[in-house]
Length: 163
Ligand SMILES: [Zn+2]
Image (cartoon, rainbow, N blue to C red):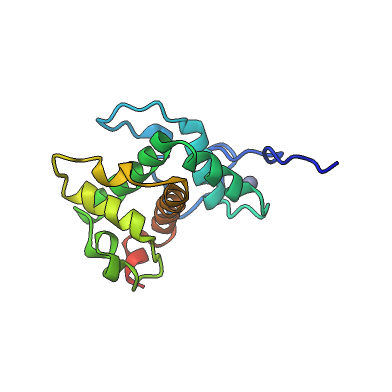
């Protein structure tokens, strides 16, 4: 009988993570105005698995599946990445909010991430309108992009979008 894969046999935490040139607050450490019931331990683990470049082929995909299944968790992760980027650039640059500009960067985020970044950059009264339309597969891309962005900043700082 095939073994059901429910998780990996290791965890990624702040205590075990490989160090980068710069450190940013993990998702669990950022408290935004928006109240959330998101599992921030899970979000941190996804972030640290990315920083660690985990060689386990099941690790990040499983974590991404779990984050994407939780709409609040994905939203928190996107807000966290946008907050850090906004602090670094004093606002979000066109390379994050404009889908055509973003496509020219090595980061190359999904259009779903760009639309959330655009909404973060220029909030309208219907703040959650874009996000509410996303399905699990789209949230998975957003979560993947969010952690990759902050990891890229840890290595490249502001140059990450301009290589
Ligand atoms: Zn791992």
